[in-house]
Length: 215
DNA sequence: CTTTGGATCGTCT
DNA sequence: GACGATCCAAAGG
Image (cartoon, rainbow, N blue to C red):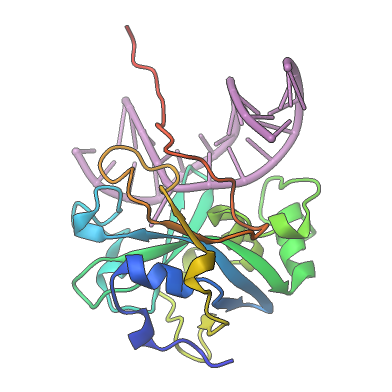
């Protein structure tokens, strides 16, 4: 399997996202087949971390395509994106779910809390399909964290790589609203997944993230 | 199967 | 100071 090329990754994230489905993410002896992604359009997308311009956190997104943008959220989770626009333009695809296809033992150890697990407690038991189901689960299972922010995924020898996989026919790609996105852009069908995959997170139609304001 | 509350801290206003 | 591009366990149907 050849690695993906930088030119493959450069483009409108709404088009790069479905292209990424079935690609294989490789990191530290583990491999995960990507089954769910979300497109973020930077300056043209109120839901994007880059919407309000560059900051120290989102700096990688403003760099060249093919690099990993890793961010920390909810006080405990890491999520990983692939940058897909030329330097100066911030666009990216969030990796939302994958099927672990190699390195199950290590992935399970990270997720469930083996001797060398993440701090805190993971789930007691997980099915294989749940190892990398969800953006933060995927990073834990694959061992991706802050050190991998900026990693060049197209470079052989990089800590994190992405390899070509069987292209997914359009008829098997499903689109829906992005998860956890409210306000402008909430309705955009930029969450893309492979139909019928057990490792895609539960489909939720437009989710108004409710938070009650005082009366 | 679904709903609910809690954990927890970097980032930006 | 407020709020997440989330996950988990527990409880209810």
